[in-house]
Length: 493
Image (cartoon, rainbow, N blue to C red; front, side):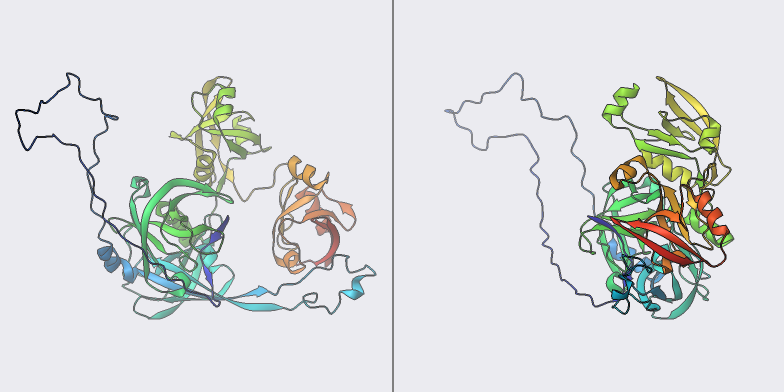
């Protein structure tokens, strides 16, 4: 099962028609049995103690479904289609033996082995209007790397849009078109949304504009891999590629989320979709409009969930909270006195039920904010106050992690964990978390391990920065990819 963004690359796509059978469900309600025909030969036997009911729960009253038609009629004009044009580097294979190997001559001229330049890309997504002067919310991945963004309104008018800012961490982007007096959505409160509540999505799946689909809320505050900042709303609403950035409405017609991702083995809808809560989106969009970027806060801890066994080990009454596995040196957490083995029970008075609760609350705070933490330590609670740092300051005091000179090299790296060291058989090296710019153009990928630069073994981002700083135009990186080691020459930006 894979987590997939739901923007859509324009390609040949097949349409599958699906039918649904609707049936009426009748309920039998227990009542009083009254004989309809009396007879002197029939003896009625009553029990002194009637049978005990299986449950004392009262029947739940029936409710009518929302007026989906009215929701669509009220909001369809606020939903837009988004088309993007951009460029991507053409796929290129790496010579597994290195350029200086005697075997290199056998790879030169082979398809995919020579630089092919950049190829044009096109994509589809959705969005919705939040201000009369043309501000539109969508997903960051919809407009990522786009050189041209076109917005199509429900009345078929088209506008070229400007990207005011995007935040990859929360997958939120704000774009603007030159138009006035536009219809806008009404924002709701995701906190009042409950599991089982009706919701409706409008978007452009596979480019099919103004498509509406409905369902219910399946779960709330769902944490997803690589998306620690967002407490997602999980639904069973049919969301497909092209729906990304479109609104999720509640039963009153208010926007409560932005459709963003799906779990899928096929690339299409399989019953599980995720939306970013609208309060999170508006918080991020306000910063993007004002500053063009977002500064996320950082506490400086690695945490994990608390299961029943851990709760018993630490003497907790219930399996809840965020267990601190590591405290980063010189971080806000270390300065506040947090240590490994602490269990964080609440953040500014709000209970922490799962590890993801802490990540989302810290990530959506601002650097410098005060965090009052209820901590379980040595069998009792205590209060710890931390002044949050900035996520941009990801390099720790000893320089082990972070960016290895983004502008010149284009790598975000971190040390290998003990588990990764055991699995790879490597004792040192820096794992590539993200490659861009010169490094990406040279073919370095996420998941590669940098072993050395120009023959000098590396063990920290700071060391890599110093080595790169000694060169003017080019360095040679020894990379391990799987079981293969290759030298990759990288031109410095």
